[in-house]
Image (cartoon, rainbow, N blue to C red; front, top):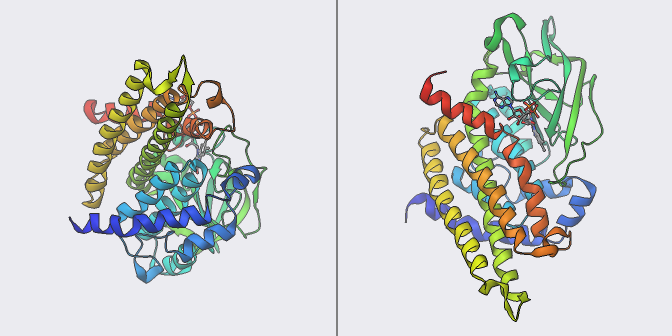
Length: 380
Ligand SMILES: Cc1cc2nc3c(=O)[nH]c(=O)nc-3n(C[C@H](O)[C@H](O)[C@H](O)COP(=O)(O)OP(=O)(O)OC[C@H]3O[C@@H](n4cnc5c(N)ncnc54)[C@H](O)[C@@H]3O)c2cc1C
């Protein structure tokens, strides 16, 4: 057993115990209110689960990066798709951006409070008229004496209603194309920052999704993340980890849905036998199992590549495309085996179904993943 497997074995029972005690009994309520309560974030922080692979110097646990993916997987396996997305943004995306790009002063300012759940993070790229085509963004940061003045708006921002700090993508030089975009660390207490009503969605209700507005927000000098004009390059550098996290969510959700379905088909009777005895049921379940095993092999391959800093944007696009499309397809098949009960809120398979749908959309749509993969072969 290697060091990474040791790490996994050590943390897995702890993660399960934590979620069993602190999330299982309350998750339905969080779905109803439309967000994960701050008290739970603080408990995640106390348990060392918010910054699993962040160095201890900044309040992290200093464990292997694969353990963070395991937390995402386990949340999803339990049917907590919304929680997994919220966690993915805070712990698997925003914190690594800071760890990789922030100055020492910025790290000290944000990371320890993010690691304990006192500060929640979000990342705002998408705008009403710029989603897949991010180059069309209109949010603008203009250099002024005291720092930067930010104007614009963002949409579909996960954790947007609760975030204390948002990484905002803005144009600093509209004439410079891809080189004219920069990233900013925006403290949401600043005057001029506001949030719209939470956006109502068909699934992932526990994850809040918001529209954000910036009206003459005066950002201090040290709000710039990394170098001016390198925003797009940083997104390209960091997006693969986000997509890996979405893959972890897909994998966990497929396994959770299969487990529910296996129980159900053995209990439910039709035509004098359990529905698990019909050849169609057996074949469908076998197909789902086979797909999950293939998905896990590629996922583990990508986790290993990432650990060695060798996972390319194309690897991440292949993973995200395949695992999220597979998630939607396999969960659809699982739901079918529940008959009418699968369509009711009474049976958790229905939540797996609605939570899955957005996986092929956010973090880059399936069509954009195909563009990334095609570009790697054709050059443009
Ligand atoms: C629940 C949820 C959470 C989200 N969280 C965040 C977040 O935290 N931060 C953030 O910044 N964003 C977030 N998003 C936004 C998400 O990343 C975008 O919705 C996504 O990138 C698609 O952009 P769009 O909605 O503008 O669709 P569009 O870009 O308008 O796409 C519409 C359709 O056209 C297709 N299309 C577009 N371009 C091409 C092309 N070149 N070739 C072929 N087809 C194409 C798309 O694939 C899609 O099918 C979230 C979205 C949702 C729904």
